[in-house]
Image 1 (tube, each protein chain N blue to C red):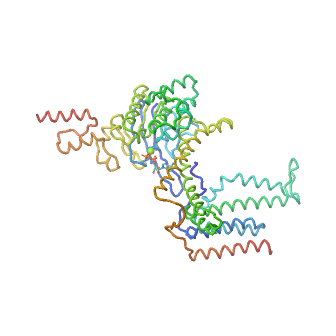
Image 2 (cartoon, helix red, strand yellow):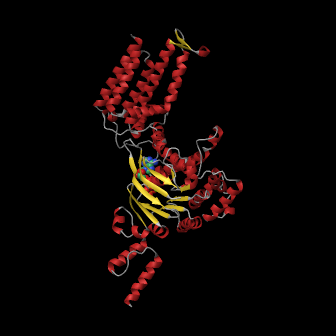
Length: 285
Length: 267
Ligand SMILES: Nc1ncnc2c1ncn2[C@@H]1O[C@H](COP(=O)(O)OP(=O)(O)OP(=O)(O)O)[C@@H](O)[C@H]1O
Ligand SMILES: [Mg+2]
């Protein structure tokens, strides 16, 4: 179930005076089982890119092949593609509509044509995964929940479809630290269990550095950089130029490296940073 | 897509049509629409067509833009055309099955009616394409002001219109977003019978209404926070003043009306 994106370009309101090029010749591949992060300043085209991955938007040119199927060809059944690719939109809480949480989460699985028992099972699992108590919450109206709880319900609605590719567009924007941690832990857990492809858009560099196997960097509609977190976060100057920053740990290590050259700067995790600093202190005796 | 609807859209430009006073443009548009229905001969309709094409040429709005505005009412035009075609009486041109007859006067009425509708849409689209929504409502407010003695709330009406116009694109965007989000969850808006399809709108309509109420509430709070309290004693940033071009436009308008009325009643 690899994803191969080749030279896609997307222009909003093409031909009108206010047209804007949101994607400009973007190519990349995602291999089976990868956890991929996408970073870029606001308006760099991240959300536009994600909507191409399940056929909600069509590129003006270029192709997208997912699991051997070219989803840009006119005779591709997009509904089948959308069943395999779960996309959680930015601020997904605004898509809730049912009377009860249970029914809302069941909307996706029901569209898949599953049996009632399977649906009930999946709803239960999905709510547990996003950290909501099933019995307490199932009969509540989604509109009487707090913002963070709504977000979890909305994410559960996609997770319950058990997509082969799970795409999360800034799932933690505006949440408190606990909800933030829970939701990322959920993504990690699903990824471990199902070995699916997970794509995460985030402005939090520390999360990206910690979770991802591969990072894509967007700038003004172009893919300017891609590679492992180590590679991407090694070039501080370039990232700052396009309005991004290093994860705090990496920035700290860079500053230390500026002062003491024998400290390695290319460290992204707190544990490894501690070890490196201890090593340095031990070296000095 | 859903965003391509041109109704109420502004086409930025610097032409003399863009710079005309909105009040003059509104009056001219209303007069033009009335004139369309006064004119009932070839010459009258042709004059009206020439007038609107002249205005379009001067405004430099691409004609394709105006034609796009016709798309949504295409069926209404066809419908009225067909209806009128068979409703006439008098000299029969062709007789079709089921006793349907096309008469000479039916044909003329049908053609005139279709052309009138097309010109009407083009004329009023030109108004909204060359006038910013804000100036448009300012113009309406100013034209309605004399009605204040009859307790017509001119300012409030204008403010409501401004807000409605301002939020059309926002709500379209919101609809687009919600539709996509539900499609991503496997919703299907295209297949099934009519009941099925009506039901499939619920996942769009519920979130849309909730958004609309939320937006309204936020807007009301933002307005209160900035001490908005109705129209009394409000001044505006860009006062409206008639310039030479506006008087020239009035002269042209009178000339046009003269031709239409003269042609109808005196020739
Ligand atoms: N529906 C739309 N119609 C027209 N232009 C759009 C639309 N959606 C996005 N754009 C434009 O396309 C560009 C890319 O937007 P996009 O939403 O993909 O950015 P993003 O990287 O997701 O930003 P953010 O981090 O703020 O979510 C922006 O310049 C935006 O103005
Ligand atoms: Mg976005």
